[in-house]
Amino acid sequence: MVGKWPLEPLILVRVQAPQQSSTRYRVTKRPLTHLHCQMNKKINKIINLNKELANKTQASISVVSRSLAKTKFRYTSKALLSFIPKSGYLNSSILDSYINKNIYSAGILFRSMIEHSFRHLYIFTRALNENSDSIGNKYYNSLKANEDLESFREINNYNKVVYPEKTKWSTKGNHNNLIRKAAKEFRIEQIFYYLIGNNNGNNIEIVDRFKKEYLLERLIQYTELSSGVHGGPFGELMLEKLHKSKVSLEKKLYKFAMDSFILHKSTIESTYLFAYLMDSNIQKHYEEIKNLNK
Image (cartoon, rainbow, N blue to C red):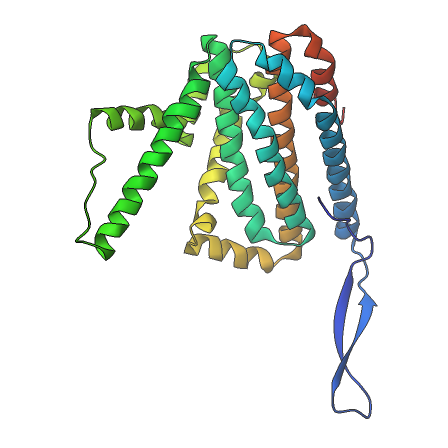
């Protein structure tokens, strides 16, 4: 849950108590600047929209889920639905980061949100383009197998350093190579190349939004935020730079919050659209999500 945004932020001011050697503290109100007033209104609007979106989704998700379960897209439907709570958790944490002025965490979380959004859009687009459940099957089988394989390989290599006398396992072989090859298509750069080549002529409205310029912008954001995720110096420099300007900090935090909400809403909207394309009875629920804030 996202906490309430205070209308009058409070700060602690350190003052010297008269006739005492100890220091005491008093609470004083910090006057709101025009920027603070603007940002308070904007972030409250996002938080209220997010609550409304959550309520509408909660009221209809079971209907959408049951409808999708009747289609031939067994794995794809499961994958698309799974991204709704995942992106929701990320979005809520990013909104919390705005309230707490935690720009570093907001950037790290938003990078993950971009990757979640790309994978969701890729599964959505590919399933419709191919009219098959193949991509959902790959997501839950090939990608999961590759995650297990890579985890085993890395842990095995670490163990070799600490316990060289232990039995060594090999992850080489044609079967494992096929798993790795299949999983590569879920890498964000491969998703970018696929979407650039396959969705720019699509006549579905929500897919039409994600043209090459938009995808490029998001991928540049993703790349620039990489340093913070891995504890690199570029992320540190950007953090220091933002903290030198309250205006820049506020604007960057707000952009993370707004973009995060947009990506989360798009995840829900496109999942509901997928269900509506299979079942016209879902139209009402899809349009409720689509028309939110219009």
